[in-house]
Length: 333
Image (cartoon, rainbow, N blue to C red; front, side, top):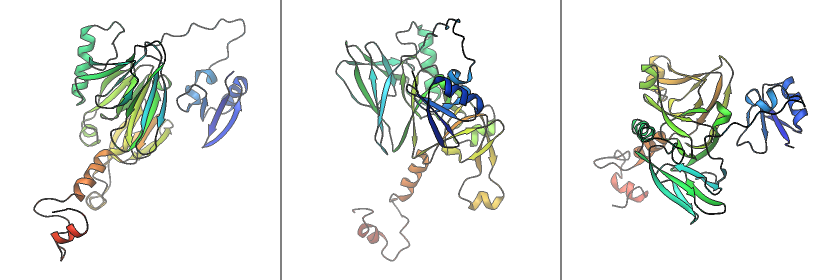
């Protein structure tokens, strides 16, 4: 029997057995729950095991729904430069972005597939694969992804590394209504069967100034996905009508019920000298949002600004000039 843990306002209580956890959940559903087997804490209100009506002893349980995605186990290693190690049972597969593999067991077969791999080995037609490839082109990704399948008779492992310092977020899509909206380059890898689609911004201003352009990624299915973001991750559960203002580049992912809009920062002085740009993202609940402390665009911009520029640099007004750059270690010649 599972042991349940509940969390209210950051305070954890438990363990509870199934009956006690269900009673506590009915008394106060405004929190989160977790048990062994859950990839992450989920809202109590979205957990059917606690918020649903209890079945009578005479009632036969409904047959389990057929999962479209493979069920995979995983471990995330590291702190600042993380990688995820996936354990595959015989016949299971994981799809990953090209160039993210770190290592794999010899029994794991690697195959380049057309599109997002969501129909590979599951009866998908060529048209389905063509549509998946078209979606990837629109989001700026490659036509192909890489499928890693366990062709052996025992468990095998494959690992995938994050492309820059940050955090890997494990998400079980079945806990979020089967759909997550995320930034274009956030996807790292997922269980076979997860569809990587396209999400178009409905409003022109949001598309132009929302930090992600017209197009974001839409991850759909019932499997496990891994999303990468820069720096430290902050999760917020927004209540209905609750509004959160966020730097446009710090939005990593959100559930489909969250409304994503933009708002002007303030007056002319704030726009010109505030250092936060002209617009910020306005997220309105209900729903769950994931935020990053260090967007890659910000990191790249700081690195470019600090790099030595031919024809002049930030120290060109100093007495030492170029010699000062050499002495300080900024450049060697």
